[in-house]
Length: 332
Image 1 (cartoon, rainbow, N blue to C red):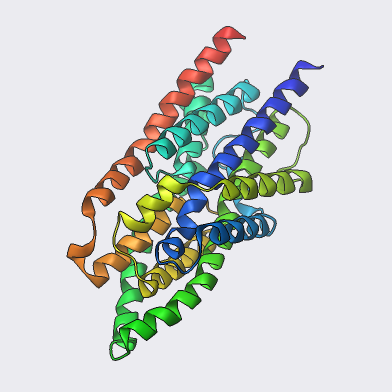
Image 2: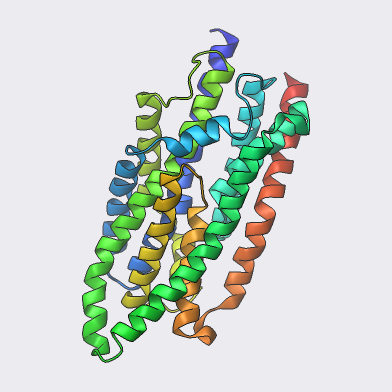
């Protein structure tokens, strides 16, 4: 078999593995609130999330094109196969580590940091398309902040509108509504997160000369959608436990406010073709709702751990990818 073809097949496999891991690592966030409030049984929530992630992944490709063309130039990237392989391996390793310890870290931060780190190791800082890269970083930084603020505002509105309602009946109604909001959040997750692996595969196809367009092939879109759907079906129970209970005690009305906020931010980012961290958006939405409900009711220690992970994921994944690239380049 031709070496270039073999490398491309390995990259496609690794990209689908990343997408699969992303499914059980990140999608847990989309259903965590509905599981914690018992609006959905865990098995039903996971099946629903898997289906909605698949549908979301098959709907859009704009974020994938951003990943393909805005971080590095796929047409001039030296040792493109090794760079992409190192980036995927680093992102997978970081995702598995944070999943094992139940830390809601960002697959997006890990992947984007890894691409940059491997490219810098291969061709220096000039290999990065800084304008596009910094736009992506801005989206990753500001989206959780906006999610926190909107979550705070949405729940503040809910408190005013439903202040005279019977609490038990209100929560029963919102438990039903939460089924729909969890489905919506799972769908928006698919519209953004699944596209990152699509972008990586397309980047490899261009770098290896199998295509000259950044348009996403239907087989790439479909295979990534399936991989994420299957990953979701496995479930990320440790992260569900962290997001669903260790940030705050979530009631149905809190869950609906957080779900709507998260879905709004993620889908808005998808429409402007920007990759965001669904993990941090959803977690920040819950933090915003919690702060609006009762500041002392938020477990800020968990929030602090998440914030630290938010800051360290990019540099760690970039460094790890750079080291893996150097190792691959040395060995082969």
